[in-house]
Image (cartoon, rainbow, N blue to C red; front, side, top):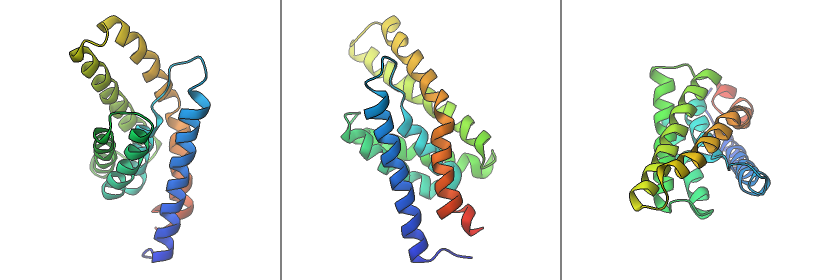
Length: 169
């Protein structure tokens, strides 16, 4: 059964609420804690692509990137990177992996590694800090990001099951 206009509005509303919740948890609940700050919005972009497909993942990733750049990350490059993550996850789970938690986890590992490599590489090239210091930050950040990948997936899966692709299959 195809999605009606009302269904599409409900789907986007649910996913944008999930985006808001994940951003609040990431930047206002986890940030003050004495731990490395996980990067949950790239994982949410991957979840959107994994669950709903490449076009949705690209647009949703772009929205997540705009939120992330508004919170102080990379400016417009962040929106483009997260759109690419959502799009790539959608294509990967359409043609290579299953559209399930395992596909999401594999795509999340790839996205988190690429994100951290970019963060470390860009700061290393600008001379912001030595490699040892950068890896000391990136390692725990990557670990926390991957540990929280499942709750982020569940937020996206809730939207997909109740308002998205799976609901209409």
